[in-house]
Length: 322
Ligand code: TXA
Ligand code: MG
Image 1 (cartoon, rainbow, N blue to C red):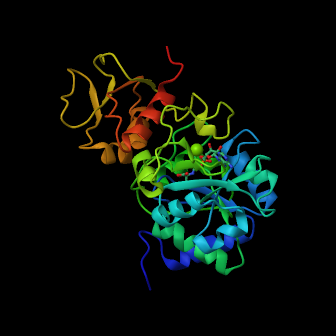
Image 2: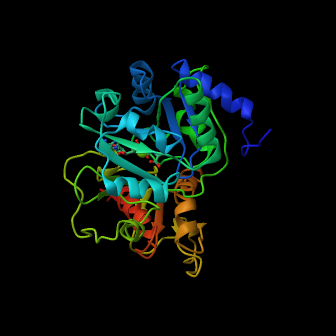
C-alpha cells in the first residue's frame, strides 16, 4: 500500500466517501489547505459558505484529478489554456474558462465561467481520484479559513480556524505543511490574451514562456470583484502588519535571513529565498497571534518570481491599518 504523507489510503477513501455523502473534507494541497465539497451538491456548497462565513456570490475553484475531466466543466477551451494546462498541471495554477451546464451558478457566482485546478499534492490527487471513482465529478475547495483570515498551510491551522464550525461527519486530512505556501495563480483564459487575476507560484515569466507572448504587466485586474482575494483587505492576522518603519522592542519581525533582527524585536521568520518566504509566510504571521504580539514589521521580498505573490498578499494583510 502506498503511503500518502501522514494519510493512509484508507483514510483518503473514507474522506472521498464523506464528500459523496455531502459532507466537507479539508485537505492538503501544495499551495494551501482547501475546504472541499462535492461541486455538484448545492447543499454541501451552502455549508462551505456557512463554515467559512464567506459572502454568497464569491465563486469557488473546482478541483479535478486529470485533464481528461476538463471538458465536463469547461467549453470553448482556448489553445493558450491547453498549453498552460499541459505545462503546469498538476500544480499551483487555476484556469478560468467558459463554463458548461455542470458548473452551476452556486459554484460560479452566476458568472459564465468556471475556475478549475488540478493540484499536485499526492493526498489531494488521491482524494480526487477516489472521489471520481465513486462517481464524483469535481471538488469545490476554497482555502480552509474563515473569510478574510490567513489561509492555512497545516492541518493544525485548519482545525484552529474551522474546527468549531465543522460537524462530526466532516473530516480533515493531514498531509503535512503545504510546500508552496501561497494560493494558486489564477489566470483568466476567457479572452484572447490570458490575464493574471491572482499572482502565485506559476509566475508571469512562466506563463509567457509557455505561450510565447508578452502579457500586459501594467494592467491591473478588472475592478469587478471576481476573486475575494482581490478585495483590498484580506489575508489578515489579528496583529497589525507594517511593510515599512522599524519595530519597537516586543514587535514581531519577518525578513530574509541576510537581514539582522533589530534590537528587541521578536524574529518570526528568516527565509533564505523567495520560495521559502512563500512557504513560511502565513505560519509566521499566524505565530505572531499565538505569541500575543500586537505588531509585525515585515521586510517585503524582491518583486521577482513568487515574490510578486508574496508582495500581493502582504499588501492585502497590511491594508487599512493605522
Ligand atoms: O491555491 C488555491 O487556489 C486554493 C487551494 C485550496 O486550491 N484555493 C483557493 O480558493 O485559494 P479561494 O476560494 O480561497 O480563492 C479562490 C479565488 C477566490 O477569490 C474566488 O473568488 C476566485 O478564486 N474565483 C473562483 N472562481 C472564479 C471565477 N470563475 N472567476 C474569477 N475568479 C474566481
Ligand atoms: Mg481564500
